[in-house]
Length: 164
Length: 390
Image (cartoon, rainbow over all chains, first blue to last red; front, side, top):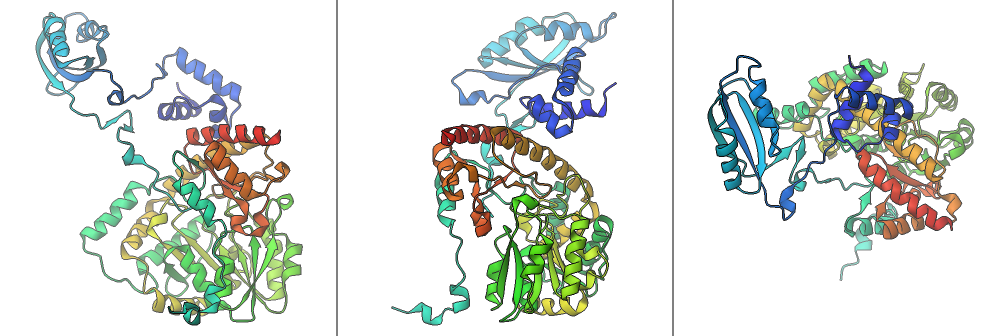
């Protein structure tokens, strides 16, 4: 059961995970020690799963490509979709895996160095798994926004210039 | 070669341009500057308010409105003032919608003051009051508010400044640049003097919604003060609507109708689209105000505590989104402090004397910026202060 203060901490960390416990304490009218304790609890119960940067790899020389793969799956007698999902998400290449409602069952987002590498990965590792009926691979052409962050700086540039 | 001085009005030419324009020009031209200089919210106007303005354009509501503002908006302004500050004005003849609070201030000053009159201006304050007073031929009488009084208007100072020529007291609280506020008991003392000396008050309450830890009281709500007060407020700060240029003045009919004449001839009416947005803001914007205020409050504490930790003397601001620390102990002028901070650490803050000579020895720091931006700036200010302390 999350308290109101836990929720507020989670919301602020989701927005900026580098915000310090000291700053959180000032913003939420709490002691720094109490904030640290609550964050520790949230990490322990895995409400906070990690702290990651949002990176625009286009700004680097790293070769990479992102693909969204729609999978149709036969649910298994024991474990339904979970077992096959587990097999898939355990691959390092897989960044994201969701069970979906609608026209397909699993949505998988994965990254590779090249389209060919991703295509081979899908063909050789995923499509051949027992229970996979079909795959549809969509390559990402351009990222506009991720985790609430807009890629193009111009969109969010500070246009304020009145000083008084 | 035309001698333009022959044509230009001495009243206008004698008004000084802000002496720190040079500083602003440098700050604007430098690259990669961490700025804490702006005088407006960092929030964008809430989506539902923007959408309402777009809808009004789609409907073709692009004509002039009534001079005093769309009646529907004036009704909403009255409801808002009742709900938030326990004030009541008749939308028919006691509320005038203006192009920002700036216009409302100008109208009030022009409607009240004549050559030879005096108007009292507590400084530091927003830059417009004294020049606008001078333009009427009246004289601004400056009261220095002081850090030891938390930059509140001291009643004794007020009494001492009032003469038989005094007609108007400017009361700009919560205050830009100091972040100072006047709470009810303090306003009661001021109101007593105002009534005893039979003067009027121009209450600029544009930051009223950004009062932290207490409920803002308007001097117009105190006994027998409604009839002596011209209240001006607007949408810029409460709803993050600076660019819409929408404000309003509330006053007894006898005063407001005179202000409305100037407005009618000089302005016609406030922008129609902005007024549509304003109606939406006042109807549905209370949660937006609370959200933004809470967010500013968090940042206020971060910057105030941060400056204290650095060893900069600062009184705790309870309003607006500025802190006004003293840099006196570093033995250099406000301008030099800010100029060196800009050149040496690429952090821009505003020299206190930009807000009148009483601001010398102080700087204004705006905290309408993200927490990470504020923290980065604090680190650089810390580095700079350690350097100049040696």
